[in-house]
Image: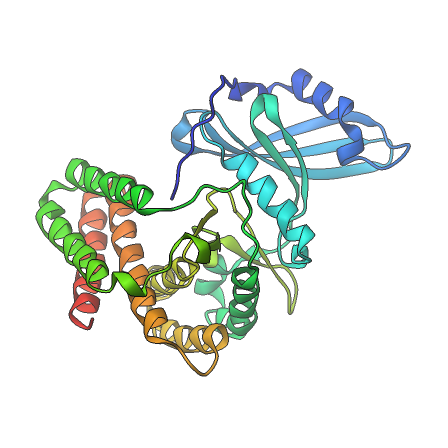
Amino acid sequence: MIFISINRKVNARKALDKTYIFSMFAKRKQKFLSLNENLVDIHIDLVRNFRGKFRNMSLKYELITNRGTKVVRAKIHKRQDTPYRAYSVLQWFKKHNLETYTAMALDYYRPLNMFFYKEAPGISFEELMSQKPRIPIQFTPLIAQFLKQVHNISAQPRFLPIKDEGQGKKERRHWFFLVRKCAPQFYPLYSDTLKKLWVYKKQYEDLFLDRSQFRLVHGDFHWGNILKSSASGFKVIDFGHAFLGDPLEDVGGFLAQTDSMFHYYAPDFISNADIIRKRFIQNYFGKHITKSEQIRLSYFEIQKILEMAAIVAFLEPNPGSKAKGIKRLLIKAEEKIKLL
């Protein structure tokens, strides 16, 4: 993921101040309310407060009006540009007639670096895996086709950061740091595996894309960020880490995380991950996949596995679960590297 700092001070706690937020909604009611609809009261629900630091938060606002109640979702970040990025991406999708498959952007409020969007009804496919493990299989072709549509748009949204080689190195240094600090026993193997992957990329450098071929990349495309919104519909959410880069980073990341999610949520149905892989590749690439696509796809899938290992090292509080999770991911990465 690419993290871009904002160059101003943001008091994120104001997002929880009822008086402040009521005033903000009242002044910008044309963004949220219908004609002749007036705000009467507001209820605030802090849905997510990452690590309890009041920097990166998700909120739900219930707007009580003279005509009923409306629910508005919001994301705020004290230090990074992710709310602005998410808002801009959804506006860009609207321009390219892809808003059917995404949440509806309502507003971006610069003083709080806050992005407002319409609540998208539904349940994430990640949650459905343990309850109805075959449901993701049914939606796989449509989701692959949507992602291909996104990646086929040749226009490059200039508001997005570019994931060049410098950004890639910065990202890898961050992973090294997390593993060395949070799971030092795995650092030698982790370092060796990541270096092998980098050598692989250097070997096939001429088959990777240059900047002129970059497209919008979601950056965290997985079942947890896809909602089942109806019997045959879905919504893709969380574009706050989108960037311009190789579109196959989305595809490789999706395949890697599909395997990992079935291991975690539905281990008895792990074979479903293989079915999804085949259907996704078939519907994204069609009948033919080039050597360049195959090389890049393998690279990005292994890269995502190693990124997940670093995240497990950082976020998993239970030492036993942490060790088990990292070990499984590193074994998976080594197995895939041997097949290259």
